[in-house]
Length: 337
Image (cartoon, rainbow, N blue to C red; front, side):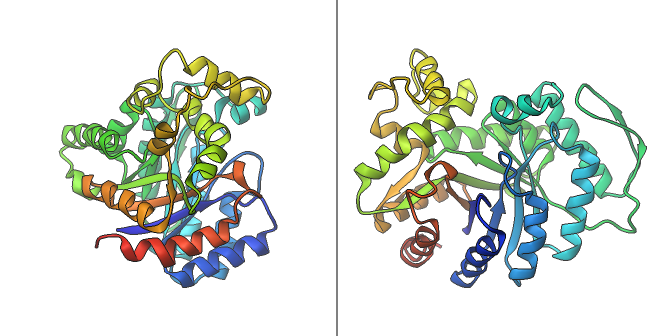
């Protein structure tokens, strides 16, 4: 199993680089820089991280074609892949519609059609092909990268949408499964990925699966669960596809309440809307042996990479640098294989 983490660059870049450089020394395989909110630009941040690290892989996780035109994504991605051959991953997803996309007037377009077209376009551009395409989100008219032999760029799709999992199985090199720490739900998701892979004659074993979930090492589970419940798990539920969130145990009657609580900090969130056992389906929180057992359970059903998410909503509540160190020093040695 590989171990990665995501950390939002919401603080000075030199400090951000310090943490990622330390994480490389601790043994992490991959660091993800999110394209989240209106924080530092992830492509620029990753280029800086390449000056602070030597061999670990680096990824943008995630960006989206609504805010960034695919040709601009492609240009940035091949530049980073050229700087770190075989060590850059491009993560794609929908982005945050209400909080980000709508506030900047991003184009509208159905996600499945848009992201499938984006993966196809990027694949062709990375292969040196000329592309002509037009849809409600972006257009290219006989465009190719003006680069001699563009480097290979793995594409990972981040989603919670069943049809997007199928699209990832058909087109992507990897899948970032957002906020699912439950092995039974992960098994169902792997089935959707497999459906897409088999439809295209692909070997599902060639597609990497990343479990991207909040992971906190702590001896005080009760406090951590309380810290996560509203700002982190509530937000994850709000952005999760209906079918997947119901597999995760979210009652349809509770969803409007959870959604209201995300956008109104004084709205009441009843305890039974996001009970403790539900938090555990979305996150891994507890002592080292507990965390390792949860990771082993995900690995047993087919997850090959952990994506330890350091939730920006808890910046200042938890020391993410210490948490990342404890994960590598105290949890990873107990993970099988």
